[in-house]
Amino acid sequence: MNERRTKITTSAVLAAVAVLAAVAPVGSAAATTRPSPLADVRIAAHFDLSAGQMPENVALLPDGSADVTFAGGRQVARVSAHGTTRVLATLPAPADGGVGTPVLGFPLTTGIVHTPDGTVYVLYATGTADLTGLWRLSPGQAPRRIAALPADGLPNGLALDTRGKQLYITDSVLGVVWTVPVTGGVPTAWSTAPELASAGFLGANGAKVHGGALWVSNLDRGTLLRIPIRPGNRAGAPQLRASGLAGIDDFAFTGRGDDVLAALNGPNGVVRITSDGSSSTVLDAADGLQNPTSVALRGDEVYVLSAAYTTATDPNLLRARLRGHR
Image 1 (cartoon, helix red, strand yellow):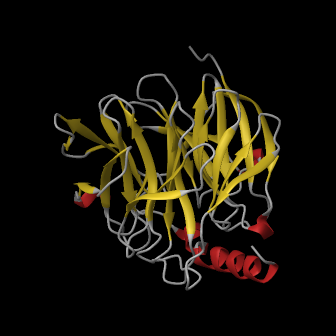
Image 2 (spheres, one colour):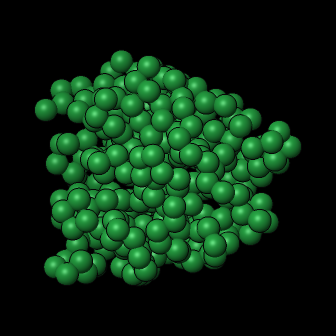
Image 3 (tube, helix red, strand yellow):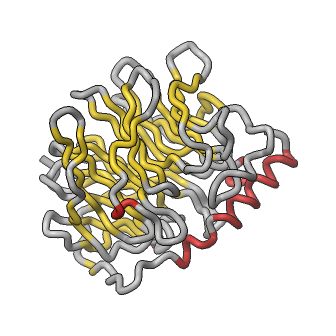
């Protein structure tokens, strides 16, 4: 990416997502503060804001490294266990520069997952029909789009069901969850429930498969939903599991039942959500958060990405240890 394009892209990103700082569902309640279940909190890696290295999503590898998407750079990168960063791929730029990307006005890489064979799947939103969709990065091969998604949408969250070999994709603009086999093909609208819709900015966002269901966050509405996966890969009716979570982005399960750690982007925090739907703040700006976008866990190791969308200061990777992990 040349210097002029980088400056333009970074400025566009910061301007487009500034609204995140003001996103707060009507009547939402702030999370309570309790003794944190996290220990050994530290910033493990810093990223280059001027190069568009605004980390949006993360997939962990067995060796302690993490594959991340850099939204403003259109990139997939690998961050080693020691904090060094190596770009794996840069997705092709749209002909119009991505100005037609819905809501945001810039092209961005979003959700990411990987399979045990080393294949990486990543979402790309450009506002153009030739590039928007699900991309696959196979070892030793160039990135390849394996499923096209609507150019007027914004594919965002990506979840993998290893048993059914299905991928689930949230569209934050269209309010849809798509499903597509890991082999690629034509996506199917899996759920169009009204609970997925936005309230003017971004709706359905993060996604995880857990306990026989797809769990989805809605950023605008500040909610966490559980959508049962029925036989034949049919979607059940959404169940509200938590609310009052202003600016909720992506999230991860702690391994303790339905307990969740969730990133609150605009409010600049990470909360723990228990099975009864209550939430408590476990990380905030004092810990180094800069508009956190996603959370991941491997064993008792917690990873939190911060994109610095509105703080415009220090995009980073924070690591911590989950106390008493079993």
